[in-house]
Image (cartoon, rainbow, N blue to C red; front, side, top):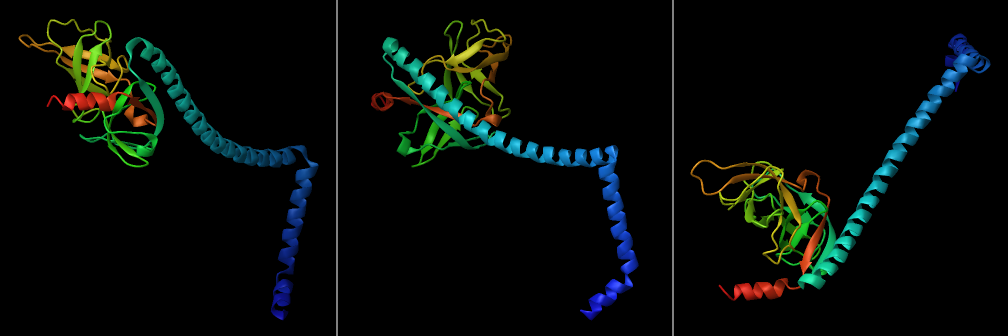
Length: 263
């Protein structure tokens, strides 16, 4: 205690000086318009910045809820359209919304993990799409999660057709750019134009006919070649993939059994 008193007495003049300076600054700030407004402005800026950060966080979580809601609404809409199509075609497709939890885009054998599994009725061989178009095919199914082979996997082949004339081709990926794939088996007598729309053919039970796949970026037909070299810009942006839909065909098991019986 005595030591503290000695220190206070030793520096008493300096402490009094500091106290007077603080008092003078406060009097100046509150009795003069400009300094006071400057202090208030600075304080307001700090508070405004804090509110902005809080609002950004709230908006982020609110946006995520909106995206999930939109994904569910898209699936419901696709189910309504599928019900109408089934009256005409006899096919019975159902769409189940899911979320991508892991995705690779820079490998030859890319994969996608979704948060749906056998408990949700997911089966190997079911198709996967999003609001833009085709994503891939379910390869492995767990209880709560499933692994999908996307069309940007060199092991994936997809039967497609030209929307303008129903001409069939096979979509393949060369392992280079996740934005593009190659359409093979298109014969030289076919007229191919830049911007032609490519959709699913409906020749397999995995996808119904007419789901968007991409558009023709360019095509090359060298002299003497029997088939085109066609580059397709994919509709699906795999680098930003978040929400998908599993395409469930009620007749998938029956059709697979029939096809396996032919082997």
